[in-house]
Length: 125
Image (cartoon, rainbow, N blue to C red; front, side):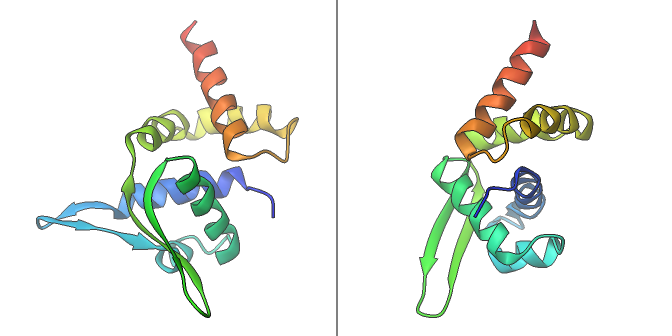
């Protein structure tokens, strides 16, 4: 399976929207809730994005391997993930980054992070 950069971004945006503290309790989410909120992506694509984000230390998540299913319980976005999301949040910035990525596709999470970093560095001068 190939990593879908749009799915990675949308998953992070969704986690950012639903996670955090509410009424003094830390709220988490899982792949089913994310899939329900992002119907343009298959659950497999979302699981793959969650695995890449977890492996890349972008999210604080617990991988659940059950007999008939696989899931991630996502507690929150890590500081590293928040920095990454801040860089890719603006749609205009993301569209420019996607242009750069198109010549490299398919890419893994490490390359995606590197392209974002280089793009942001070039904007800072």
